[in-house]
Image (cartoon, rainbow, N blue to C red):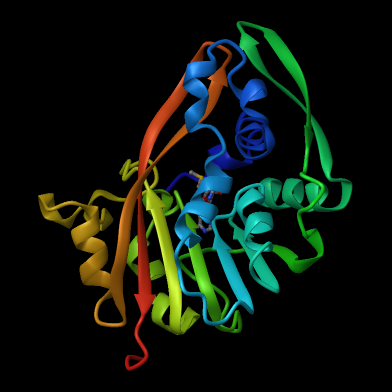
Length: 252
Ligand SMILES: C[S@@+](CC[C@H](N)C(=O)[O-])C[C@H]1O[C@@H](n2cnc3c(N)ncnc32)[C@H](O)[C@@H]1O
């Protein structure tokens, strides 16, 4: 299966802008379209709003890309691990952590580029975050337990999503939380057809419920739009479904 896109220059620029760009940098031409900017921040703030976080020791951002949601989780948790398969994305996240800024060149139109200066908000607690490369379908055995695991727009990019979900009861502490967001864009390029979690026509949420039971129960579902810039006049506008799951105390 292909994960090669996430090692390319195009993906790196696109995701640094998606994570750290201001709405004006992402969408300079049409202010009305900017409501869908800031997804890596909103998927943390909106998922956590109203949650009873009994323990705030550790969080895991699986498929963290260039790291913005990991830094946002560090506003709430003492220690955050950001893990991604892409070595280039993890290196960029680590550079953002130390340099707190980056200059990117992203397509404007045709061969023209926009050079943009990106900055990490000054109040983000970068020292609480550790980034590492890894495979969400075969995670290292000694990752430990987490009070919250975030999987933002990862599940439909995995070669074996069920294997990833099967590890969750072991990773999330009893009483802890699992947040999954996804536009459920299943593609054979990333996931063999027989491994799609589309519930055989009943939808991905139904499949998630089956794979996560009995250890997790569904707490809340909501929609989150997001905007990824391809060039100044072309965007991916998608609606992720966010599902928030609570790990029961009685299941191992
Ligand atoms: C659609 S992007 C979403 C990234 C980020 N969570 C966000 O919301 O912007 C999918 C991410 O999953 C990562 N990824 C793909 N396969 C993976 C795997 N097997 N293990 C860990 N990360 C993986 C990619 O490198 C990429 O960063």
